[in-house]
Image (cartoon, rainbow, N blue to C red; front, side):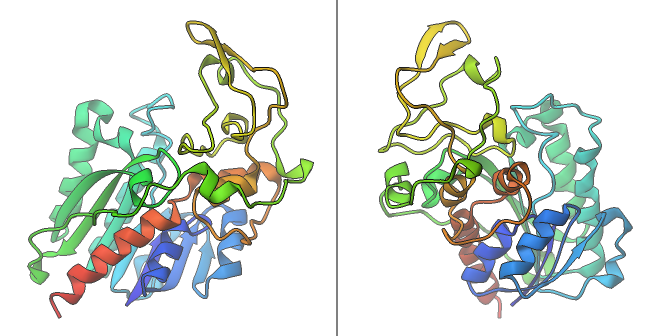
Length: 307
């Protein structure tokens, strides 16, 4: 089955679908570094540019359209401005789904989308896709329940064209043991200094615990390098008071960008184009590959059931 991807970034969502047997034939993002990274591993025609300026006719037909539309305006960790222009980019996704009429579409976004403006934005998004002729399902997920060693709460939005008569869709149950930081980091070589963000630790950073142990899952991998959590070898942080922590005795460091990529379940030998800040950004913005693969398997099963 052929897939086209909007807001593809470095390609975590696309890679998971490719691992499940889909072929990504076209992809788009506005970030030049992310597009260059995507081209290194994918055979898709990757178009770098503003999606609002791309005509639907210029996108090849595909069985499924993928879209990790920007989430910063919806995030619980951000200012959550209702008029944030990034919140409106889902309309471009709707436009392309309406014009291309794929069998299905898949979107992924932050959990905060569910409650933005009292849930009104999320309901508007669901209604817009339904009005295009799709039966739409949504499900809150945590990546740690799908083989990703990370607490990462998201919402999956999956739609099937109504003429396919797909009445039910749920994400599969992950039956294996929960992956931990030890599972993905223990055998990694020590990072080079230039692979680790060494920016000063802000008051925001020091307002809460940033350390998880080897046998735990990671905190959410963010797109901002300065906010990346500590490596599990760092000493435990000590709480001094409300919204105030300090580092323990010993060597403290953030996770390297390569360690963040491993936690996001990218291949450990994957190359990310750009400077360090850009590399962290691409990784933090991505859908974890394993989470995407499980979603892809469920979508593929649903589509094969109607053929």
